Amino acid sequence: METLISFLKHSSGLELLVMLLVFLLAVILVPVGIWIVIASRTRKPIYFFLMATLLPLFLGLLGTYLSLANVERAAAMFPEAGAEIVTAARQEAWIPTYIGVAGTLIPALIGVIGLVLKKERQT
Image (cartoon, rainbow, N blue to C red; front, side, top):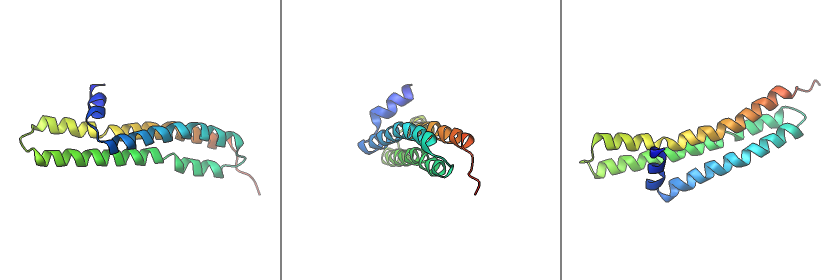
């Protein structure tokens, strides 16, 4: 929990915006997924939904990239910083990816359940 609080305190505005987008997408994808599973008659819309569920993960990876770039830039500017400080900052930088994985996992599970429930049409 301390790591998350430290990450939020030391994040730039762009990193916080990426995190907000990850949360927003995850919250939007859950009811959309439920609606698609209920309303669709075939599996095709669910496949498109499953591709869309990867967006929070990609945004989380973008946030991690931005955080790691900031850590590397700060480590280059302040070489007297200890190795344990840089290691802790690198660990904090992975938090957006973890949140992106969680934001992808829940809607993806809804999509997989939809695939199991829907039968492919016989033509």
